[in-house]
Image (tube, rainbow, N blue to C red; front, side, top):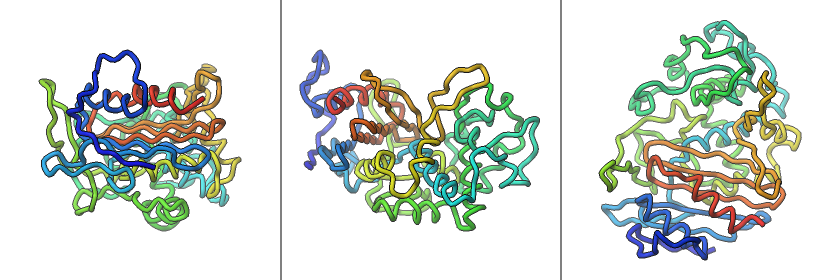
Length: 348
């Protein structure tokens, strides 16, 4: 493992047709996209083979990124973590994915259609996503309080007829988890996932707390350059996008999806098997994970994330036994493009 911090003022040519090394690929990407800071970690056969920090966690104070300690918002990769949290309760026979949400949350307002936990976790239940500036909400709410934002809205469609991405659906699942587990969602996830996997730098992003090693979060100006993003409170939507982590911790999590220790192989399969709509079309999404094939037709599980000051990507290749984690501190970065370039380097 090696760690190198590069300024996004790198002199690497952005016109080079094909980068010769992963480092060149990352440096060129950071220049083109004006990314202040980024960390990338890669494992093969469960061992780190590359882990590197680039640029700055804090531009003003020239604090460099370190992949083992700099905390980034992982945004919607939180859904994958929450899926495994849910899976532990499935293994314990306390939750059934094909049971109605109302079995666990009987007081949730009734809708025109019933829907299951699997449909909620697979974005096929019809629950809406953000509206307007809800994404930028800077109000400290509990998970239960956050449900009030959308609970009285009707479903967008009959469940299983369409795929509509919804972070709010994962609010509901975290309420299910903490209701069934009888302890707060964050506490349960820490005890069942972070502690056994030794993810010592993964935690909830509390907006009113001073958290050591948390990066500054940046936005990009249309005219060029970056600026510090507004403060937002994400803990009420923890399950869908509220965790902080490092690239190295995410690799540890990714390896759980290849060599499961805390969930059974049977339930893992449930999470990564794509749901099928009533039209017969695949959603390419199971419960908390996208599922596609590589160019070699081997399976790839993934999730990207986008938030205020965050563009992230987790790639898992079970047959090749490779995990790639990319975290950055800038919004609206085409992170999947970099993921494809790194896949070409590390996946045979």
